[in-house]
Length: 444
Ligand code: PFF
Image (cartoon, rainbow, N blue to C red; front, side):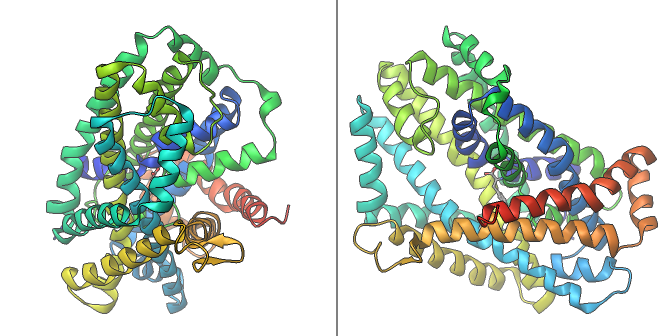
């Protein structure tokens, strides 16, 4: 059977977790919410909520040993067939992958342009970025095709030969690049400024929005609510210690987000730049800073954007796997056919997403005031992911035999840890998700 080795599972799950969410999104939202206090709240959200849902997906996958929908049915108390509808969550991965692949395409462009010329002024950098995403359709389609093609080729080879192998190669390389960048950041005077920005909490900056942003980031960064962790855990040998592995993945993911933050804020503060530049932080602010460092800046720019591509690819392959497994198990089709179907779907959706950002097609692809790209982003991370995460909690908390779960956990950990987890999953996490959900929908 096509299964991960234990280290392969940890690397692949960490590869899924560590992505654009850590190196692009985490630093810019930390900047927007003022640093230290946000990070503290984020760490609490990871520990009490993210890790709880992560363990939940892992235990379903471990017990079910199949795709999302089959696993839900087989471990439910009553074996009610309606649980198969939980399989809806595999679609979320395909939707995220559609626009994630487009963003990875922008980053490919940055890898290439960093070799030749970096903008020396923020105005020029902003204009370049704008031109790329709204005007340069031909290049964007080529980049998206390259990324989508690589993802498809990797998953075609299966869990062991495809996903495990690519993580075995890319994750250590990503680690090396990040260590190199961190060492450089350490030589800058601004490093201590970055440390105090990130680790001195100023609670006046924390409001309801910051709390929710921290929670949403915790879900996104740990790849939750998509069935990814569930599906990967179904390919982890049954006797493996999924509790320890889950903690390790959360620790790796969090450490990489913090390291990325230290690197990026050291760079920004070295140039006296704004920390609250939003999504353009990496695409507009950083290239200008790199350009001030001459040839070394170019090397750093290329390494930085390559690191983003590596991190993104290992996440991208994990977004499509739940739907592949779903079609393979439920409809008994081959991996090749499933890959063609799911790969084709996200590829086409990605083209729609990228065209919807363009000047030429933007108007036709805008609905209710949001372009298709933003709709896909909103539907997946603000609607479908929280619904799925809540369903997972309620399912385990109320529709699965407690003893079954307890036995699974206590094989690897103490009863106290199990009891805390069980309490969090039944009450704390669902309430937190409802608040997040209503807020995102604008009801609060
Ligand atoms: N965790 C990834 C990141 O931080 O970039 C994003 C992600 C991967 C989300 C896989 C969902 C998923 F299923």
